[in-house]
Amino acid sequence: MACHQRLLHLAVRVEPVSVPAQDRSASAQPRLVADPSDNTLIARELYRFFRAGDEETLALRGVSLAVRRGETVAVIGPSGSGKSTLLSCLAGLDEPSGGEVRVNGERISHRPETERARLRARHIGVLTQSWNLVPHLSVYDNLRLARSAGPGGRSSLEEVLEQVALERRAHALPRHLSGGELARAGLAVALANAPAVLLADEPTGELDASTERRVLDLLRAQAGRGCAVLIVTHSAEAVRVADRVITLNDGRVRDDAT
Ligand SMILES: Nc1ncnc2c1ncn2[C@@H]1O[C@H](COP(=O)(O)OP(=O)(O)OP(=O)(O)O)[C@@H](O)[C@H]1O
Image 1 (cartoon, protein in one colour):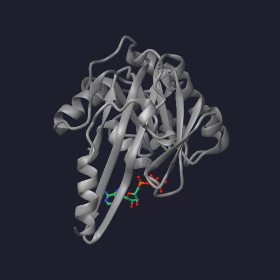
Image 2: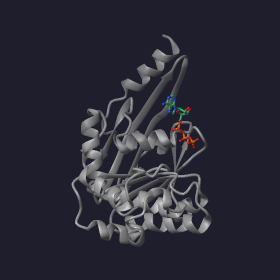
Image 3: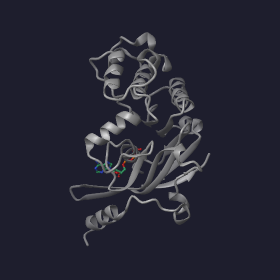
């Protein structure tokens, strides 16, 4: 069998099944808690195979994890270890080749893209370094747009802006914001629909130390409000504030409890 066929075979052979914890290796074992409803975000045995021309990569090799309500988890690992691929699969932005992702009890993987987008809008806030801001809209209008795409939330948009201490910049355009303000505006957009899960990909990469700390504090505060927060990061500070650290290596999990 050609190499890519072997990899694809391996990837699609993995069934999205519930494997008893004792049957899994310690490294792949999701941290399932006694009350399964506390596991807001669950990934089981995720595989992701890429082929670009002759180049074939198995970016995720059986990644399992769970994040509870109110928990902040940092995902670290060397460049190319699969962190962003994992986040994309968790967010339903990408489809795993095998395995499954559940958010708030609903399966988000292996569904049509429109269905994944609907589930993401309902359950997940995503924060990336591009901040997901429409450049010609004010911070407030960006927030309004994000809310119109989802189920809304109990807080008013003004309250969401207060949560990230940006109420005074509500009418500013993104290009007039500082780096820290941009990060907080991106966070406000991610929070527009009161998500149960907040996924952040290198949210503090470009920020100075004190701004970074402020953004991390805001992410942790969301966990304090009951969100399950997962941060992909290279930042030692993010690792320090996390309740738990998951290390990826070559597409596999090594779970280091902190
Ligand atoms: N769309 C794609 N097509 C082909 N290969 C991809 C694609 N996306 C990711 N990969 C490969 O999958 C592997 C994991 O990439 P990923 O971006 O997830 O790593 P990462 O840990 O986030 O890296 P970094 O810390 O540098 O951002 C890498 O070998 C990468 O080249």
